[in-house]
Length: 285
Image (cartoon, rainbow, N blue to C red; front, top):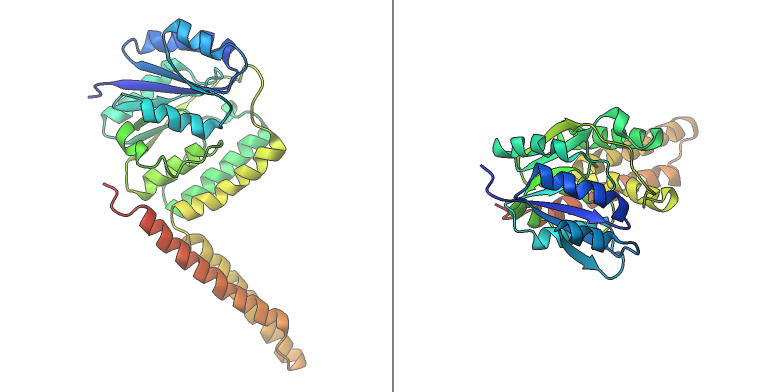
């Protein structure tokens, strides 16, 4: 059974939402430690958090969502940490669903958003692609790779703090790291509300970062599963090109050589990445 719980909420200019959210968390978990990481807010986020009795960790300027998560995890005293967004999307009444799986032996439990809970159609399609790609790479059915509503074994989560980015892709990194280390990961279907207030995600700036999630999935889990198919495609194209030009013109073109050399380079990059990944996770209990 869980002996102690910490709830960590990264927040930037979420004073209005926290005023509604924090009392609901306190009602659900009266004995839990509530930590609000004030990520350089310019509103009354800090005052609202302290008024409700939450512990407030303050960043003098904004360091990013992932950095706020790391700050909260470092100071959390609970055996289990529950991470929630501060924008009012996550229902404190569903925390018990996550904790139930933790009590049954899971190391990480992710609240999997249902289709109606996605911010918009584009974001929903992107998340579906991430889930499909991550499931393909890991061989594990991943229902929501990027959900920020999760409960986790605190000690095991802290093992991966050095891997977590300071931006918005910390859920992806932590999920893949737990799977790669052989820890038990579970998903629980949840419903999320529409966000109140303005999102801090910028489509142009953060869209590129979210695309990098695809490469992060590969490098965090098993690089060869991605690099080997790419190398095989390049080699096949080069060999086909060579067969065509030799059959019809009796020549071996530079393009054929370039594709074949590229295939070897891609394979070697994958091999090196695989060794680095193995060293990153070496000796983690």
